[in-house]
Amino acid sequence: MPLINEPVQVVECYPFEDIPSNYIAFSGENTLSVHRYEIKKNDNGEVSCIFLGGEDPESEIYKNNKVVVSTGQSYITAISFAPLDSTQKHLTLCTVNSDRSLNIYQSLGESLKDFELKLTLFEQHSSDINDATFIYDRPEDLKIASGGDDRYLRITSLVNQTLLKERLFQSSITSLDSFGTTLLVAEQNGSLHIFNTQDDLYTQTTIKLSIGANVPSLTSSDPTQSDDEMSTNEEEDTSDRFAVGKPKRTPHNVSPLMDASIHPLYQNIIGCVSGDHYFIYDMGNPKLPLDHGVAHISGAKYFRWAPTLDMTFATGSSYDVVKIWKVKEGQRATVMQTHKQDYRIGGMSWTNYETHANLQQLNKNEIQVGEEAKYCVVGGDRKIHLYVTH
Image 1 (cartoon, rainbow, N blue to C red):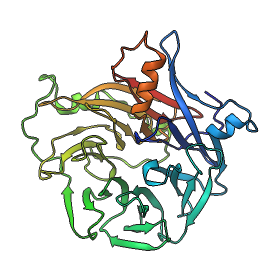
Image 2 (cartoon, rainbow, N blue to C red; image 1 turned 90 degrees about the horizontal axis):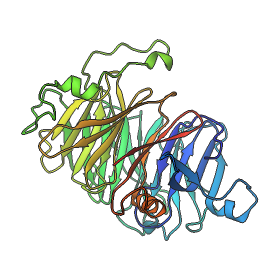
Image 3 (tube, rainbow, N blue to C red; image 1 turned 180 degrees about the vertical axis):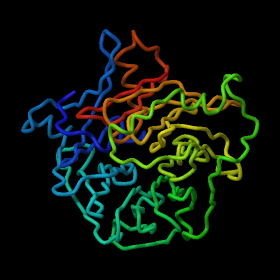
Image 4 (cartoon, rainbow, N blue to C red; image 1 turned 45 degrees about the vertical axis):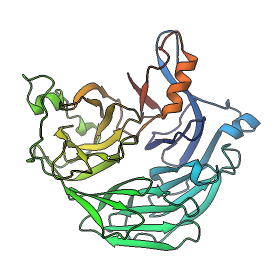
């Protein structure tokens, strides 16, 4: 992998299946980098992410496959891709910036040669913006939803740069996710809201998280383990290495709600992390969680579904621990892998289906054709970690 000159703070893989290429975007303190990439495995079985295009910024192949943009005085806190099917095949992404602005970058096509800043939205929010996501319910009118510490959710048209809808919530908006006409809004106080973006922002399904809720018809994969033992897996609290004067946590917090995600293949299934717990809900029956349990005793910050047919997801602590989970029918989620990084987590994402297909084609002798390889991508100290599960 080419040298990354600064710690990665945010990383996002292009999540859609509408193109054969694979894009990854990540940011450090002063730059946004966007690359085409491949996943490769060497003779020792080690997996690496290969950025396409060589190392000469003046070469044509580099310009078509890589771009590095200076972010000036601000740094990026979140990245969101728009599907190419909704943008006339122009690669489009949004960055959430520390100066309370949103930047919209776009290329003229699938190539990164003409990738550039197209639009900056200021004055969307009066305090820090925590997340943004594209809404692509109407291809002729791409929209962006944003939310932050001012408690406002705002939906803005990128065609004419006008505010279409807004709503004030009870607490800070910490996370947003969307799929088609569905918009998922996570509030810091432990509430999840699900909207149809073609309706107003007051017609909704609301879920109030509670660790006291009974989980129906689920059993531990190991009856001898308690929920706490099964979920924490003796996780060490290493937060002192990364934060000075960190607040003391009461065990089993349900707040703050930090991250929420719609399953990319089962859009009725949502997952989130709040306090030190993970939660999984079926939007068709939101009164009780399908599953919940302790994710990270030091506090959970990230939740990401894998884009696969099985119920695999990743969680990340507030500091340096990544866990890969699998939900089996009729059982509680089980930790399949635990990884402790040498630096705080700098964003979390999953590679898409095309990456799996490329890997199978490149390594037919090592991976059975049709076997689904899944890669959780996590930012680190001048590197990007790949955590592999089958």
